[in-house]
Length: 289
Image: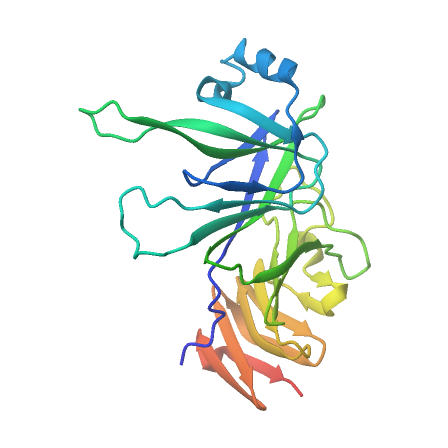
């Protein structure tokens, strides 16, 4: 029986150690609703156009608007244009992008694309976003964090926020270790955690050295490189998934495996648990109330 969360969304985390560090996303060809925006300074755009080698994105982009200090989260909502008439009549398809990158600049723009084949010359300017971090000091380690949600007519998400992660002795993990809480409109709530296991700059604390990630708001502790937890409106945990880990505890629930698993998920319902993915015989301990 499939019990994994069914709401379709993509959590995107892109790590970069470059100066400067830009991230681009191209959206649909129609309406775009922006939250947290201001005018893009024209002198910056002229500077970019005069140095295409350093700012290649300026060659095929125009009509920039942005915020040099956006609120977190900031979001963009695209209404999809059915250019090739693939959708049923009356379909209202959207793509919503929510950015949670710390200390970044956020911009909307239009990007040029060719809409035809090799023997056609049709073209279009379509919406695009750019999230950018920069620093006068090298290296600049950037963690671009966002949630992408396709939906029809109405979004299923009520709220998105980033939460801090701590070590067992209360020290905050660096920004490249990410915890995202997504509250759905029906009251369910998801917590997604991923650790920076590569940690190229050797920042501390780290999962490799400290062995445990803790999220105080949820009362969660785990040793996995990635995990996802869903709870109901009343706070009851209904679903746990962990990747490349062995142990996860959250309030009254403990999942401990005999050996670390690449992927393991378990659901809880009416005092019973069910292994959705992974080997049930790998369970060393599972307790819940």
